[in-house]
Length: 489
Image (tube, rainbow, N blue to C red; front, side, top):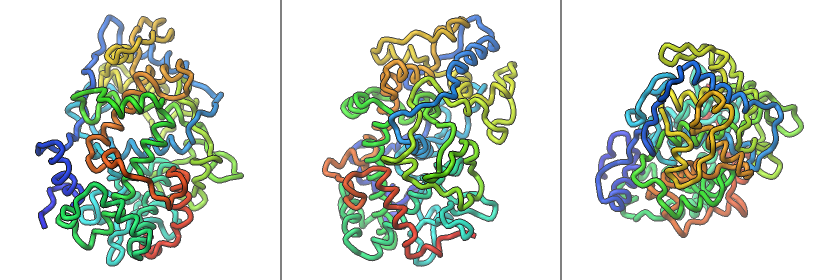
């Protein structure tokens, strides 16, 4: 058996050597740096930095609202979007106020929809995420004080593939649900029942049997089958439920049929810093965790600490026909996000010699725009629209009153959604978000896009949806064979 390359699981090596090299006809791995779709757009003109910040602050103040309404997406889709983001991007370098070329920033996450935020690099390279002995193919889950919390070390830190998936108790429980799903399906594979047969057949799609056996250790075969099975269904959810919840279907279809940004980087800053941050505008100020209970303020749902058993959510409150709804994609944001708590933002910002006071630094919308203009210097919404052959929208009055005529890309994407009346991304925003996520699947030759015969597993119900997968997890998570052995603490 060949030795895996450093930092690659045996399955990743299999796909790279047997599928990707064959398809791409070269030896170059997917790049793990950010980049531009269009190039840098530095701040120019005669306005002082103070006046520019005042203009941006005036713009974001037009977004503040306490009159929230429902959009078309389930509330949980906002947090699934956060989970997806943490699966494909992690910029540990750039800072607001400090100019940096995104092409110099390493993306700590693999730029693939591969669930490395759940699996790490697998049992061999990330053993701290897994059980031991007979349970070595199972992911750790739960604490003795709360069997539905994430596994934690003695300091309360979650033992997961990406620490950010513990930042609030909703995304942490989506993380936990994927962990539980893996363990449930591992049980089925160990039993060798009809479900095991379905998992094996699904995992083998598009992979030669000799290649599989040459690259996968026999003792990890079941693990790799379950991981690929879950990845394929994850791809299906992104294509058929997550993207349609927030992006106009015409933009999704166009991205599937065309290469909108030829020769573009795998992870463009226009996506990660601007367009994909649409999710901030869909956050509700409060959420009901369980049916019949009073809603809790967003910032009462704190993470990065052991979670009390009373904070366990019912997933049907976030996904499915009885779920709460996300806010519509548009230019209004819950006023909660204009007063970020001290534990998130405790000081002001600097842009060169300009000191931005903490009261402004606590506005999430202003932080988004300042990161765009001061750190990444992204193209404006109007520049991107012209590049895509779309009629550009005029800059909002709050900007032109302050002599700023170009709209920051993040706000521009929300403005398009507002003016379209669809409550979803369209135009520039829709094309960027759809094209980047679709391109990740196009570049990944083990993805569901390259399996035209793939059909979701019938065990999740008539339709493969987050609601049905979450219901499956809640029904079976306590029946895992090594349930007690996988607890921490």
